[in-house]
Length: 435
View: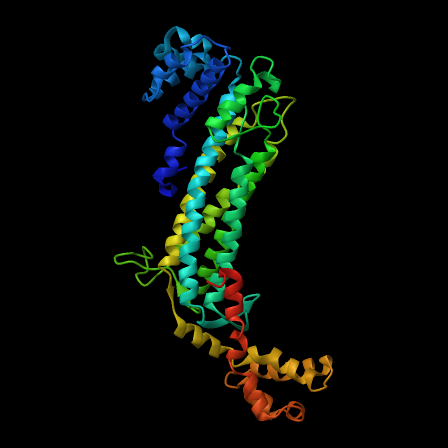
């Protein structure tokens, strides 16, 4: 992933140095396990650990790979010069996929730890802003059209609940790919004792794969990348809401515009929602990984490498991008500018039409059929809709049909905003609990 959309913590997870460090740990733990059950000579592990903590010469390993055309063999060849004669016992009974797949899953787990932390930080920020605007009334919209009042706090509470579900999904996805395999060629353990796999996986905080071919089954990874795509889509949903609310004719909320920031190279007045637009684009990149991950499930027989090039790209790119997106959204929400007065102004543009459902229901409670009630309320509503200066409640008071069933005081009662916010506390308790 390009540096512009990457944080250093995630770059390190996918660095060559980190990868070789994990490869070495797998090989060293395997030697330790084999030595403990007398499959290789005593003292082998001690010799292997001479290479512990070295800074890997990436260029030298790459040069070896140019000759071998095999990355794991190139690494083992490089390692042998530090280990000496005992290097003949390194990788004994293993196949390349044992190292590659187990390492890949460790990297995904390590990346997930950052993603989990990022989601929790996001939840904390969203919660603070939700309570801040718990009772900040704004107009709700369906199909982009004024509907009925809600509160900005409820919008944020919805985002909180959604991201909390995403955190749980991510935690389950991490469990899904927290597996390792050291089962040898075609997964039969013919040349390595299954106890070695169990001991190595325990050291690496992984679960032994129940049964593998020559690789760890890729349905696990398909599930993992699908979850990342869902998280990204939730980020985009929230970002899109902010983008809509920041439009000039709406301006109920907008991204923070910092000192010295410029919105346009041509128009000095512009304050564009560039951060949330960026999040929309990043979400598209993350979702791009889903189809290739699903297609990786189908491989030839016990193994081919058609999945390898895909994962070398989507592993780092998707996790790094999502980490960046979560961090960016957290800052957007934390610094979000909210304009209650503009929300109130936009409510006024509805001319009271958001009271139509209350009036409809009151008429039915007075004995009017739903069909007649709807027709008469809609008649008044369309008259107000097509005018510039009329008010819905005032016109309802003048309508002879409505007046024959509902008095003026009842009409004024249903027009109170408290009608729409009476269960805000209930919804907040559902989302955030009672504490």
